[in-house]
Length: 87
Image (cartoon, rainbow, N blue to C red; front, side):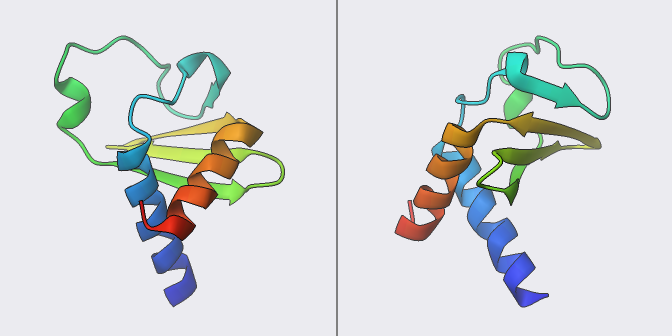
């Protein structure tokens, strides 16, 4: 359980470091559909990334009550690298 919590914390740090990198075009949404938000609205709620499977590029993005699953191997690898380097 601690490993999961540590991974979630590192993913949160990576989300902050990689803010603005996520492209809705590559997203498969399991909540409401991605949409344009007014400037500043994205900062109102915490954003958490969970790399489910780095090799497959599966990333879950959580914001508020929504979850979006991305499939992007390059982004998953960058998040894992960022979490290891402490950035």
